[in-house]
Amino acid sequence: MKNCQKSKPAQSQAIVRVGPMMSIPSILREHNCDPAPVLDSFGFKLNQFEDPDLELPYLPTSRLIARCVELTGCEHFGLLVGIRAEPSSLGLAGFMLQTAPDVGTALNSLLRHLELHDTGGGARLVTNGGATSLGYTIHVAGVSAAYQIYDQSMAIVCNIMRGLCGEDWNPDEVLLSRPPPHNPAPYRHFFKAPIRFNTAESAVIFPTRWLNYKLSTADHYLFDYLKKQAARLHQSQTQELIDHVHQFVRNTLIIHGCTASAAARHLGMHERTLNRRLQELGTNFRQEVNNVRYAMAKSFLSNSKATTAEIALALGYTDATAFSHAFKRWSSMSPAQWRTKNA
Image 1 (cartoon, rainbow, N blue to C red):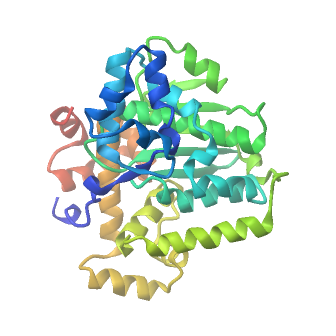
Image 2 (cartoon, rainbow, N blue to C red):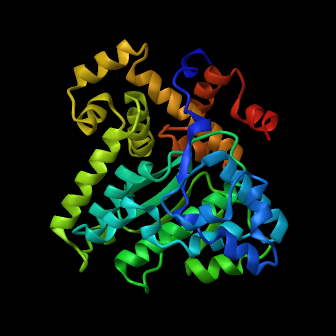
């Protein structure tokens, strides 16, 4: 546990832009619920959901979504919200998608700049031979309605891919960390693909060849301009070096490219410089990898019914035994014991 207490995410400060959730009031009305008092009970105002660039605190927003599910009795509320969210609702990160030269470049820019829209979770793009997955993982603890947030995120991912590749595009498979819903029809109707529930991660899987698909909407000059704007926004953020390292680790754990030298290249510095700066902060790269693994493991154990073996694979371990030993060092209990205690 000692090695995993430093540099916890600032959970109370995690934010998400209103953009993808602007449909919440209208969906509540469709289910005969007056949205104003519902929003007010969580400290939100109705007009806040008319400004896509407004930032909302992540944890209270998750509690709002949980309450919406209770009031409407709609177990796929999050899916409905995601279906109505256009890629542009992700702000600058969404606008960059259509101007990129190809799908691979577009998705990598999304990974790089999604934190401008959402600091409570992050996307992961993983290629394994002929199959590629684009997923989303919540990074903060104490989130309500995690299953709804994952439903929403995967619907947005599907909208992104259809926006890039054409409305007829469908995934090969969709992974959802939620338990099977009582009525899976809305999920089948929207995704138009086989769906696996109770998985470690939520992700959309598609053929790797789509990464090379050239976009007819590509605009080299506009894409470069938006990249510069995004760089300025990143510079204006107060994100620390450790946060940047954590983002890199989350995106590379599963593909075994999670090394200090790779992280340094990604951050535009020499490996010795990265090690020195981390040492000045009282930590090192290996310790921060463990911190990320511990945080992600707790998220998987809390927000999914994935097996220990599935979680181990998602965290880049060679087998479940190695993961279980590591988790016990961090928490003084096995993954199963931790899951039972924190159910």
